[in-house]
Length: 191
Image 1 (cartoon, rainbow, N blue to C red):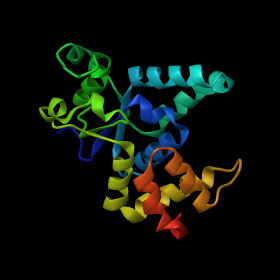
Image 2 (spheres, one colour):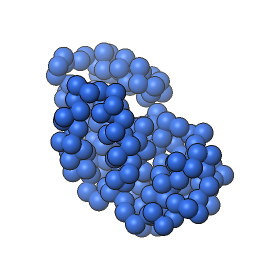
Image 3 (cartoon, rainbow, N blue to C red):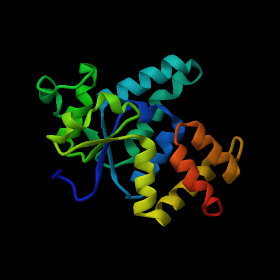
Image 4 (cartoon, one colour):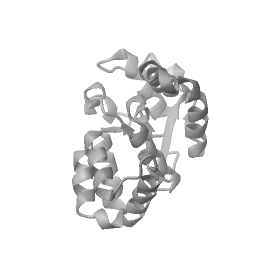
């Protein structure tokens, strides 16, 4: 789509919810591999669910949200609300994500809920839905050395406890990212 010289992806709430996946996706964006965007409504969704499921960290979610929003310049999409009513998706509650993708000139929506964003509903807007595992693999295949360096930095930030490359890859696999884990196993020495 027009509006950005870089590949732009809207991050759905379900990919921002997981701390590991959020760190991977935002770190790749911060390194310039793609432009990550989301909306305040997407923020509300993932932070509300995180607070409900993790009351032990609920008091720190506001600070986390500030860090997330500061991690990528021009990440927040606004002025998309007027599009919501005209969009059709299997789950009407997901129309705000597609509306943000349209208004944010996104090429893709990164989501674990692919069934909620069928290709035929997105094609007219030049947008595709990608599972986070596929999206990460695309980044690794397009710019392998840059992406591996980012992943190495993400692993280095894990200090409580620190993780070996093999342990880190196991965590990636447990986070429903099997392709990414398999790819990283063959390159563990680089992360």
